[in-house]
Length: 354
Image 1 (cartoon, helix red, strand yellow):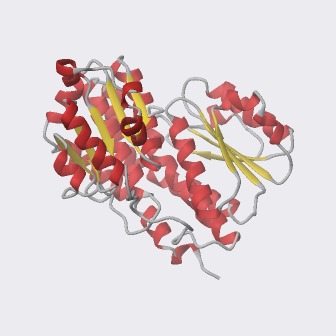
Image 2: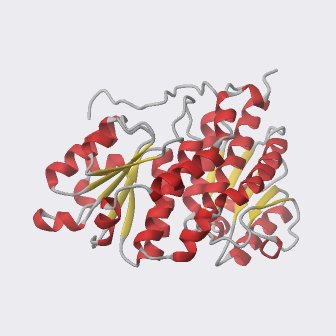
Image 3: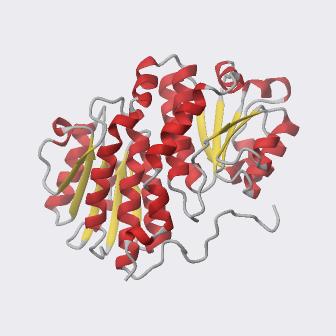
C-alpha cells in the first residue's frame, strides 16, 4: 500500500513552511509598485481560478478590514464572461481599480486572458505567481513571485500557502497594519504547530468518512473552501463548505455518525463558531476543531488542534493548509485513490476557446 511519504504532493506540502519563509523574504525585496497601485486604489478586484480563487477570497476579506475600502474577490471567468458585473471603473477611472491576478503557473488560459483584457481596458494589474517568466508575469504591470512555491504536483499545496503569506504581507504594508505584518514575520516559529495538526489530520484520514463538512467564517471561509477542494479532488469524498452559523440554517441536518465536521475558528466570533461545532458533535458527527489557543477551544469534545496562539487571526491562515493536505491525502489513500494523479485533472488548465 502506498504510504503518505511516498506521495509527491505530501512531500511538497511538507515544505510549505520553507516556501512561506521564502515568500516573506522575497516581499521585503520586492519593488514598491504593487503597494503603490493598491494604496492609490478606490476599489480593488482580486481574482483567480480554483484554489487561486479561494486564495483571492481570503485576501479580499482581510484587505477589506485592513484597508477600509471595497475589495472584491471573483473567479477569473467572471472578468471574461461578465466584466460589467465586476468592474466599476471606466476610462480614466480604471486606473483607480487595479486587478490582482493569482495563478500558480501564470499560464492558466483564463489568467492570461484577464491580464490582456485588463490592459486593454486600462486597469492596472498585479500578477501573483510562482513562475516569474510566465505569460501572466510578463503581461502584468507588476509581478510578485513566490520563489519557493512552485510545484510538480497537480494540486496546489505550498504554492497556496506561500502566495497567501506574500499577499497578506502586501495588504499589511499598504494598510500600515503593523501587528499583522509582525505576526506574518513570526510564522516560522509557529510552523511546528501546523505539523502537529497535520498528524491529527493524517490519523483522521484513516477513516473512510461518509461526508466531510468544513466550517470557516470571514477570511477563513476561503481557507475552508480550499480544504473542501483538496478533499474533493484527491479523495472524491462528499464535501461541503459553510460559514459556521449558516450551517445551522438547514445543512446541519446532515449530521450523523460516520461523518466529520471541521471547524476553522479564530478571533472575533470564535465562541459562537465553536458552539456550532459542539452542536454538530451532539448530533452524532465526529468533529475536529482548529483554534488559536485553549481559551478559544474551551475544551470542545472531539479532536482539537491549536495553531497560531497569540497571532493576528489573519496571519495564522497560511498555517492551516498543511493539516488539510494531511487529511485529504490520507483519506484518498484510505479510499483507494491516487492523490498524485487525481482523475480528470492536469496541473494547468488551458481552455480550447474563450
